[in-house]
Image 1 (cartoon, rainbow, N blue to C red):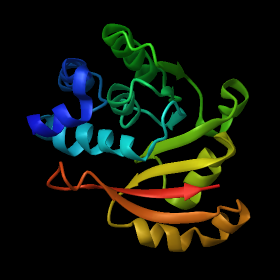
Image 2 (spheres, rainbow, N blue to C red):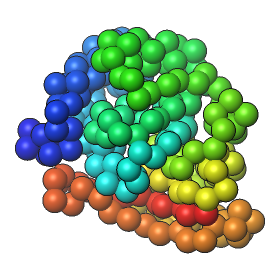
Image 3 (spheres, rainbow, N blue to C red):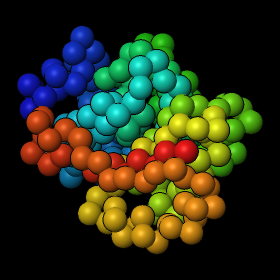
Image 4 (tube, one colour):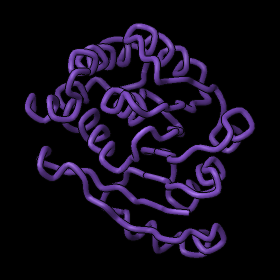
Length: 203
C-alpha cells in the first residue's frame, strides 16, 4: 500500500497521510465516514479515488460534485498539484469540515463552494473536468454535472459493477446532452488489488 501511495502522491505523501488522519478522526466523529471504514481508508477510498488523476489533463480546471469527505476531490488535489479543483457540497457541516482540512493541509489549489451541483455554474463558470463519486445514478448525474463543463470536457464518474447498466439506462439523456462518447475505463490496475471503475462521458 505504501508503494502505491508513494507512486500516486509523490511529494505530497505526508499531506495525504494527514488527510487520512482527518478522515479517521474528525471525519468519523462528524459523520462523514463510517467507523468500519477506518481499516480500508487507504485502499477503498483514498487511493481508489486518487488513481483517477491519470485521466485528468495537465493544468485542468476541475469541479468535484457532492464532495462530502473530499472523495475524490481532495485526493485528486493532493495527487495533482497542477490542477485547480472546486469542491461543491451543499451540506454546511461537510463544508465546514472540508474548510478545516484544506486550511490544515494548506492546499492552494482547492476552493470550496457550498451549493448544489446544478446551481454552481453561475458561481464557478465552466470547467474542463467534473468528477463525482456516490452522488447519483448516471441518469440523474448528467443533469447535475454536464452543465458545469465549458461546452466541451468530460465527466469522470466513479462507479462500480453497475456501470454498464447505468449507461444503458441513461441513453436518452446522453443523446439529449449530445455526449460524443461514453466509455467505461479501469484505472489503477498496476497499483491496487481492486482497480477503480470510471464512466467517462465526453462532450
